[in-house]
Length: 246
Length: 204
Image (cartoon, rainbow over all chains, first blue to last red; front, top):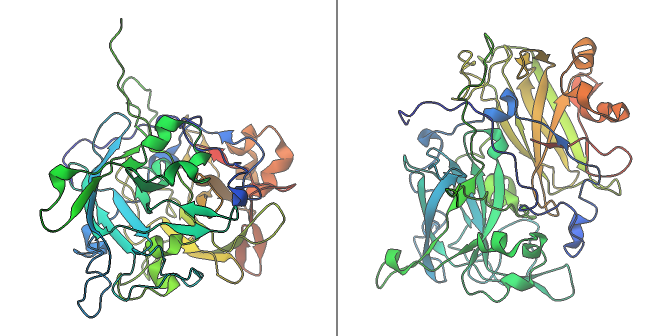
């Protein structure tokens, strides 16, 4: 564990103009799954300021290596070998150590390994599609995987998801809980996607697009993409009155 | 000119999609050779202190259909009202209780189940007691950003009536959407994303 002082402040309020709204009719499934009444604003209490922590004993050392973590035969999966790496920071720019990141993705052909998946592209016998890691003392993480393929989905008659990797992130408080998707620089499908376009601000979409990171490629081996993740910042507790036992 | 504030922006949320299980509960969707077990499956063990309870429920959409691809997470205090978190400064929580659970909706019915303990009382910011409650977080295909809500207990009527959050809800007829029902020895907490009984969701 870090020897930094434990922080107990509430989190910065979420910028709801930056985040996608619940009701986005061009993404059709949101129509019946979006609350229509106003959210009740609630300044953080202990229930939101605290959150679960995950230890290195709960995950495997190679859980972040999707090239190897599923294959039973030792064969490698098909596809472009890539490294996806970056940092988890909060809105103050402070690294978030000890953050659990879980990721999942389709294989190189755009096919997910899931009981409900029916796309005609084939499964890869050497690719599961899940990985996880806990960020280090400076908030860094990395995964090794193959670049996922784009795939069609039933929304409009001819909608395609851009290549993407799903990320689930735990910070230090349950109010920071976040699930998002990472896209790849240069993919022309990004700006056509109704799920991406649920985000109203173009600058916010750009925050989800990982650039090619030639500095961190491995020559003759893997390309690299860099994806930093920003969680809500924590307010300072300076000058706040704290009651006994609170 | 002023100094720039230079805060970063929170990463925008995107839907968890229909295949959230691959990343969060892979064993549940038949990927059994990567992780030994799905995180959040068990919140308690034989030594956990407090009253054992079972919480079941279903997430419903605006047509009243079960949301079968929902993933539900809970976060709660232990039986003494302490959180198993580094940010908990009031004391040490029960080491045999994680406080965090994760359950995918059943693929056929959408129902989720948590085996846990009844949480104790946690103080509000001003020191007033909050009624015992469990924080819920719901994601699914079609939900662009995770939804936070709380479950309160039907057998805590007096505490609920003075709870700092429940008493703040302007339309008091919506309060029952946050209170579980006791049925056959278990607590049932259904979550309605939309409609006449839309659950109160929080911007926390």
